[in-house]
Image (cartoon, rainbow, N blue to C red):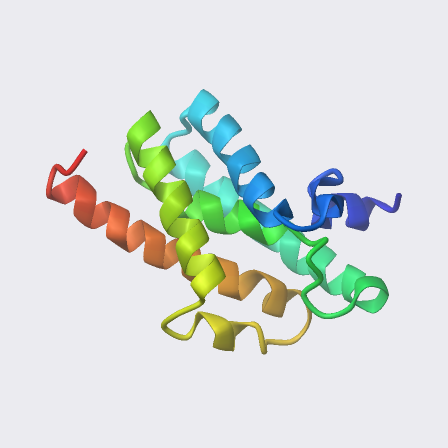
Amino acid sequence: MQVYKALASVSGIGYIGRGGGTVAAVAACLPWYAAAPGITAQALLIVAVTAIGVYAGGKVERDWGKDSPKVVIDEVAGMWLSLFAIPVTPAYVAAGLVLFRVFDIAKPLFIRRMERAAGGWGVMLDDLLAGLYANIVLQLAVHLNLF
């Protein structure tokens, strides 16, 4: 397997088929919860995975087509963005997962429009926006002490 395909599919998770995005989002939660990175590390991780996703997503588009379901690195970036600067607790991670998947699947509020971007950006931007919306909701939950 070519390196960029392994990166785009998050070591093969994307080959699962239906539900691969959810599996990738859950898989992204595990190291985030286990490591509980500080805010600087969180930002660096999100930027790094986004950059890798833009590159790998653009490369696989030639072989797999536009925004192939095999590409799930976008779910990792979006999931991590949804948890950015949120307390790393089981409740917040679970809420972030649910919110991210709801926004990612339903694609409200201009999320679907982001898919029109060219190359790897089209793969990544919709999930990043879904993650941003999930993060905003979680930030409100944190400030309102809902969990």
